[in-house]
Length: 202
Image 1: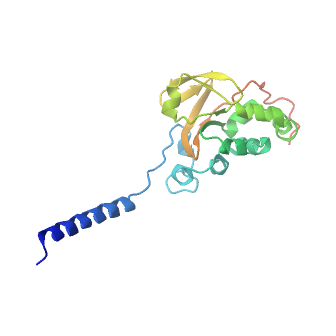
Image 2: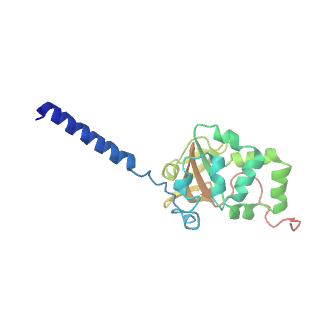
């Protein structure tokens, strides 16, 4: 017959192992995004869903969000992505493809991406904050200062946030390795609107 002390020790060890087993099989927490555009973006088990891409660097996340083709191309053309990956914490306001169409003519956008990369880089810096903010923190921030040195007001609009006068989050809280990406519906910055002007038809 086992001594009582040994029996209690074995029982305690078994309990600890059982607890450890439960912990190791717990599923990873889901990454949630919110906003009216999210229903049109990858979800569930689809490739590019928020949980699958959570925690990756910004340059790896952008290609998986299908409404950010123009923004991703601009980021790569500007050579800004390596700088952002090296920062300890960032928030990225990523205009949708429709936002770029509403802001720039194709000729103007081509000029920025191919010939005027300094202006392009300044434009994109107006879409990055040097600290990580989820949408709840953003709604309560009052204002944020972007990498181009501009301070813009932020207000709460329901569960979304408005940045400046008209730019609003439409699918917020993509988690990246060093912060958050919020898809927005307008292009920030001071460049003039040229949509519909002087396109060469390509």
